[in-house]
Image 1: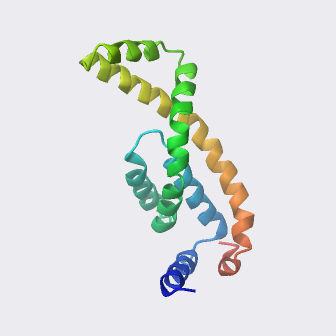
Image 2: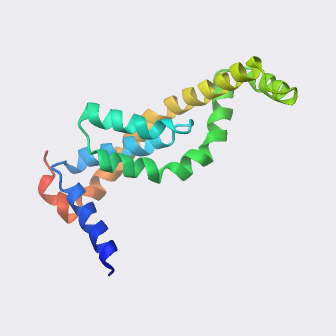
Length: 154
């Protein structure tokens, strides 16, 4: 095994041994992944740091989950926009398409902001249940990790 890979493996083991229980680490990873799927570019990284500091979670772990979610974030942007448009039954999609054809204007900016807000609303509705499901699914998996075995009851 290369020296670089051994170093990364040791760092990951240290991160797992920072005193977090498997349930708390599962919550951290679930929150990082869910926030990482936020349908607005650039916001998840800062939001993960804020959430980790406020809830006293493991910052490297939440950021790792956030970065792992980037492909999902890109893949889910259009579905979140469509779900948000359906949930809020808004005709802004047609307004955005019409204004884009006639060039950039303040109306275009307003319509795109509305679409982003609808996508974030759809994400918000789905993020809570996603965090719960991921936390419940990851907890038993993390309890089997030898480094976490001694911290099961925290």
